[in-house]
Image 1: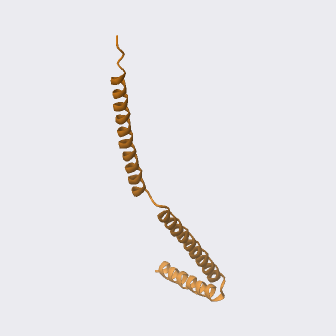
Image 2 (image 1 turned 180 degrees about the horizontal axis):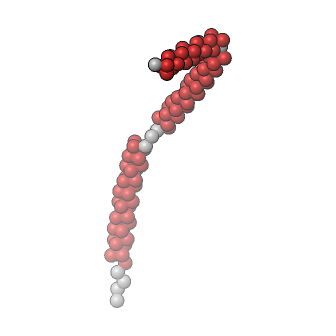
Length: 102
């Protein structure tokens, strides 16, 4: 019986060629999927800009709170504001008394 070495060599070459083409196709698909994922995902520049914008908004809100609290506190303490409130209370109480008398 004669050994068939030639057909084995052909089969091996065909299988190697097939495996290479499958690997190449899979690599191409993986590269395209990676590119699509990067295109859909946020870039680092966008992420930095969003983070800095949020930080700026927080700082400005904090500054507004501090200034409004400070002005409100100074208004509560000022003599003019106290006198105005006192006058307002007197006026409202006299109106209430007048309505109760009738």
